Every structure is written in structure tokens, then in C-alpha cells.
Length: 239
Image 1 (spheres, rainbow, N blue to C red):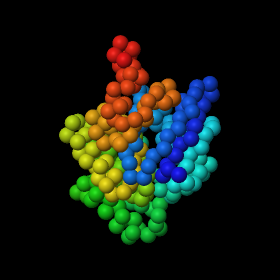
Image 2: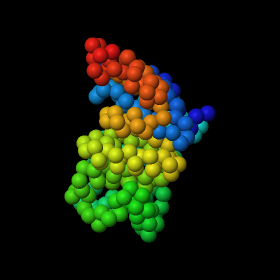
Image 3: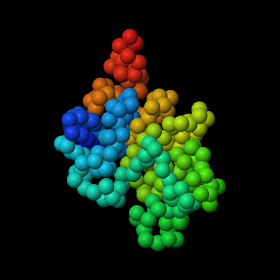
Image 4: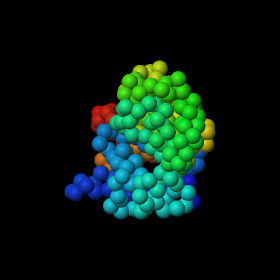
């Protein structure tokens, strides 16, 4: 069985089908990309994996265990962490305190949570900002803090939602380096990203969706040249 598997998942909101019979597998150690135009259902899929929304139908498995009936905190405890498209740190708390909040998932000890948070901040090149209030961080540093908070929960699978959004080219390169470093540390990644330079450069495989349905899957090169993907992003004239 695959490390992670989504089988025929469907999510309806009233009369709207946001995710329509999507299936995919992710192997341990890979970076799996998920792309599609705005409103195509990418973040909804993340919300279904973490059970922020319940499935209408379908199944989700992690390391052989079915998880779609578990509460969100149990899914996190099993080893699925995530970041959010809209970054909302605990603004009046320091960077260190923000990351410690994630570390408390696996310990009740302040000393251990602090040690874990410092380790993660060093990994994310944010240790020099540890005593700064989160509200004063730049967008790039807030994105790093979001990753650090997720890493503090000790995930085996990390869901990254638009980590490079709003970053300049230099900051995008730094984001790519951190993502690759996370993968090299043994953490499997599913990434949603609109910045094609980022997702095409780091993904092993990519699934493209539109209107909640799969339109293509394959290597970055195959996806970049797929007529349905070109049509979804640029229109019929370019397909």
C-alpha cells in the first residue's frame, strides 16, 4: 500500500461539487505537486485530508490506516502537518512562542517544547528572529514561521499551501531551498502552488485539477506540455 492515498474523494457544498471523484497516491519521500486555476479545489482537498471538512464520499489512507473519520487533531498526531494559504500567526506572541505552540502537540514540558522550537527555527533560518513578535515579521518570514509551526508538530507528511505566494524571486529561491531541505530530512510533501517556477522545479509528480476534477497527471515536463493544463490556465487559443 502507498504511503498516502486518496480514493475517489468527493466534496459537495449544497449544489456545488468542489471536489469530484479525485484519486491519487503519494510515495514516501517524494514531493507531490497539486496545481489548478483559482477555485479548482486544491485547498479544499487539503481541508478534506485534515478533516477541516468531512468528505461527502471517498476514502483517505495514511500509512495503511484509514483517516477520513478521525478528528483533525488526531490526524495531526498521526503525522500529517500543514501550512495555510493565508498566514495567521499568533501576532502578539514571539516567533519562538508561536513555534512552541506546535511543539506542545507531543509534549507537556515547556523545556522540551522550547528545545524543539529552537531546533526547528534553526532549521528554517529563523533563529535570529526568535524573540520578535510575529506581527512585525515580513511576508517572507511569516511564510517561514508558518512552515516552522507545522514542522514543530513533527510531521511525516507535510501539506504546503502556496508557500511561495507573494514572494519576490530571491525569496522564492529561498523557499525552494527550504522545501528541498524538508524533503531531504525525510518528510514527504504535498504542495499546492501557483508559482510554476517553484512547483515545476521541485515536484517529482504533479496532479492538475480544474473544476474539482483531474485533468492531467505526470512529471513536471508532461504537465507543462499537456493541452488540458494549458487550456485551463491560458484558454482554448493556447491549447
